[in-house]
Image (cartoon, rainbow, N blue to C red):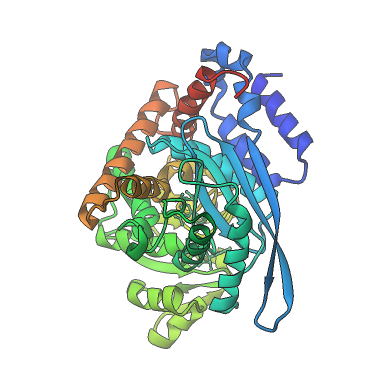
Length: 446
Ligand SMILES: NC(=O)C1=CN([C@@H]2O[C@H](COP(=O)(O)OP(=O)(O)OC[C@H]3O[C@@H](n4cnc5c(N)ncnc54)[C@H](O)[C@@H]3O)[C@@H](O)[C@H]2O)C=CC1
Ligand SMILES: O=C(O)CCC(=O)C(=O)O
């Protein structure tokens, strides 16, 4: 049995009820056989066993009082996965599906993604099974304050810097930042994704979605001599990543004809009107079918996964994990889709990914293509340390350069290890090698 199979089998044995985490480890390890062969010293130093075990996991109670005066109790957690190359960094997810297996898969992905950005950030992730949907602003505030009351003991600008993810946007970051500042009596860059009036960075809101398109444009140009221009694009989701991926895809000349939420999807043959979508989702926090009130010519279909039956050239899954399976992949390919870029974390199942690679689509894996969000968080940390802010154009051009560099690195690494044009292998290997060599240099006690 190879060291990689042995470690994977141990991961499954130790935490048998965490399928998303197993999937994330398996997907990375699939690419690492040549790395293990090239670096027997890493095998001997237990790097593969150590990298799948979080450095620290924190679980805590989050009691809060709802608008009816009733006490509610949620679970909070933070997985500080790996700090070999910098302070733990990664978002917080508030969604009823959150449990350790989800947070561990996200934290594990984050290690390699953050490494690919070229910035000094380790990997971490956290969240709660709290559902902000349908809650009043005051309820969300009381929850966030209680969550931070405990989390504040474990984070810090040089220790662990959380940010947003599903269910955590500017509103939640604001409430948490306010509470952290009150508890610690210090104004530091302990969270990113902050409001622009208290230390946030321009472009952070747009960064993940824009970054997906910058990466994809680079991949299309280099691998297929194509671009977004004149393409038909389908984007799943209608949250932060989806809206700004759709915006940049349109700016690059694509036409986004469909977007979804967890209940269903909208098809608009004229191209989705993004101002309407922002009004519905960012301001109103409403369901996507509200779109029909403003654009009655569009069509709404129940069932979010049906969105992949819409004919397109480029598909950008930007909602959630495992939202695009093998059947959806087959349908996309039959309809002529030639590129898929992951905006969400692990949105394509392993079977779908294998099919995309086998059929030579340009496939951009999330840990490379959605790294623009955390990269811009890294830029927010730099600006906070300098007590300075860059302009929109300055941050946007740094983001663009970072995404181009990530593409170059993943593309060249894939080629070097014998996986030409396989960006999944390229991203896994390039992300891993930097962290593994830092872990090796820092000794086994680490
Ligand atoms: N916000 C960020 O900077 C980054 C987010 N991501 C990933 O991107 C994905 C989306 O995150 P955000 O946009 O930040 O969250 P969000 O909370 O702003 O939006 C999530 C959207 O997905 C929709 N959704 C949920 N389940 C769905 C389903 N099964 N089918 C269709 N739509 C569904 C929701 O209705 C919502 O519109 C997640 O996988 C997240 O981990 C990755 C990198 C950075
Ligand atoms: O900006 C960040 O720190 C986190 C972004 C994130 O959660 C992700 O890349 O999945």
